[in-house]
Length: 442
Image (tube, rainbow, N blue to C red; front, side, top):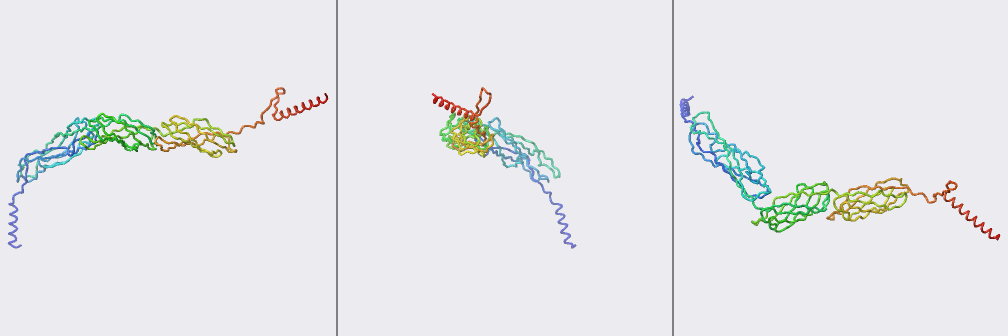
């Protein structure tokens, strides 16, 4: 190695040995300063489903900063809020908070974050201002590391904190509805009918230009076909009556189904708003059914007959313009299988007449014939009942009149009528001949 190279290396090593140790900046004093407020509107209406978004801000500042203190970096600043958790509660307000506590992690200073809470304003909430307490939990660094010597160990001390921040919400005066009565007409499975609602404004606001709207509740079997009724002014404590046309699903059951009712109106600020939903149950009758209540009809083997069949409406609504159909099969036949029945109220009976012919080879016995009733519901929709049966009896023809018997009390014997008639005729002829002979002798 050359001498000058050795000298350069020695000088470089000496320089490295006398360089000062790199120091770290340290912070002394200070703590997180947490504040919060509601982002967006803080005004809500009774019955409203709301999302309350809360903004959390950390604006803490350190008191003193030391430069060139120690050799280890400071893990956290005393102004950092560590492991922040926030929880919103109702605090006695007519609001149900449905979202639980939320973990937000660390919030450095200056720093900001947010949390959203789902809430339901109770339907009977009174207007006014309410305070919702927001509980914030966190920890922060409290021990001073400013005088930490140049070493490879450091002891950090954290203190937990819990603070409560009041948040203000306002319940607005609104139109609030309550369905007082619900009447139905012609409402059965698979039909169309009417719902007549009586509705009261139980809120603290007078509504103008109001319309009452009927809505399907989820997958309810009741489906509105005319769903909006304009009522105009709807003052506080006022009552309106609204008639709606609805249909009922064909796969529904005989039970009560829900519908939703809302009101759109113009409030005192001139804004068009929609009230909270009021849900009401509507009873639905079962599908209209019929039965045959007349005794089995009788037809004669090999002859034409007219039979009477009496139908009863066993459903809960009137069948309008009903007509019955009878389906025959060999050995029975009908040239006219339709019979007009007219309107049949619930529990009502109507008799139909059918012309039936029986084949001469028909086996005597009972034949169940299919029948059905086609009718119209209250809104003139064509409906048809399920198929059911009516029994028809085929009977043998009666015995001929010539087989009538004549009984002689004297002999105790039985004479057939033709023999007796022959004897009587012969006796008359004999008596006549005897009278003629006697007359000639005179």
